[in-house]
Figure 1 (cartoon, rainbow, N blue to C red):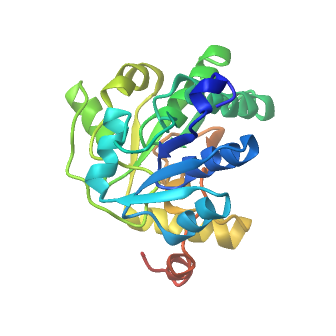
Figure 2 (figure 1 turned 90 degrees about the vertical axis):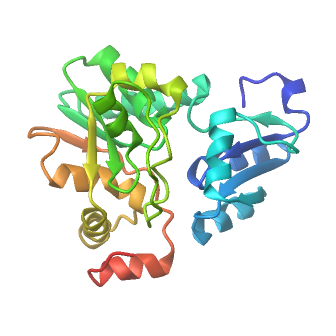
Length: 259
């Protein structure tokens, strides 16, 4: 948004997000004094919607299939302003790359970095920085078993559409691999690590009990993958991106259940 010309921002901004990216866009819109609209799927948890509204964002809630079309088409009819794509915008990907720089600053000898995979913008941004400065380190996409389009696409050798099943892991996973992200993801990422739902619930509980870190399902997915030793041994970094989980779902994990 800082790179966009003033005239592009004159009618505000909008994005399509389950909640995490939306908060970043809403925060910046409030800082710039411009209106912000967020198209959210009907599976988005209330805690994310409340956070968007606290930052002044207007919410347009649509069925998941319609929401996913916004990511595919880079547009939603009837909403004015600059569309900030949550995955494929080059500036967003570059911004995500700064996380890779921070990881290498703290742990130069990292062996593997595990990143939640929704559309690929976060993982590809991090991988671009890591590969440039530490080619030996591998960056893995972490997906959930109910929605793992990148894993299916790697197996087929081309972008694939999958049968999406909603779960409490709502911050990652989509109906398909976005075609514009396939060249980057297939080149930069070392593979896809697919976690099971119960493993992610256990990881949410572990992070809360032992580290006092509240993670949503998407953020805990890399931890679940690391605990299964899918990424191998050595110095493994898990990117826990997202702490927006409804209180009742968190309580279920604390009791040893799966939301």
